[in-house]
Picture 1 (cartoon, rainbow, N blue to C red):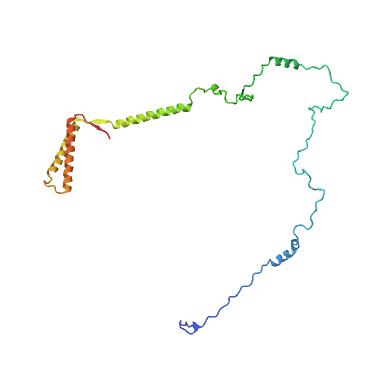
Picture 2 (picture 1 turned 90 degrees about the vertical axis):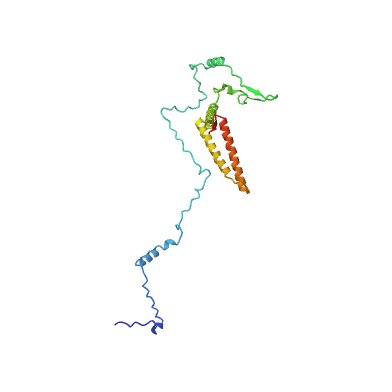
Length: 257
């Protein structure tokens, strides 16, 4: 049987709903709980004291002695081998030395001969620097010219020769670069055909400027007109000067830029 659905504006909807309290599940209890309690009761007596109950008291004889902690050498073991000679004892008062035994070498004669034939000792070179007679070694004073006895005395060092060769090489490279630069800037001679062509071009330019100059008005009443006229006059003078110089000189040099 279906329950009738109430409209949102029903009277029963005004009543507050009843609170339903959630049902708590039963508390969890471990199955090992009694065994754990039993073990805790058994080991409880060991927790009453810190460390063992009875400690062995050190005896008063084992006190710290002086130099007891210093490293000690091992005792030397004396082993008398059959090859070694027995230890010599001190001779007694009643013992007499063995007489008549002589060594093969006569040390007295050999020492005398060596003293006679030995070269005399050379005196050590010294220098005195005061009137009281203060002496010092001459060798360590710096007054002895030891550098004269060197093998490379008077020989030019290698670094100087290498430096001279580098300087010569640099000088040659500089001279070569200068010559190449001068060759690039050398004067070029104009040929007859180029000279004629240049003259024709200058004359043509002069004719164009002159034609433009003739087209100017007779009355020049403004500054721009006057400046234009002066400009044409300067161009004509420059062209006339260039034409005269080229016609006057048959050989013309041009610098290469």
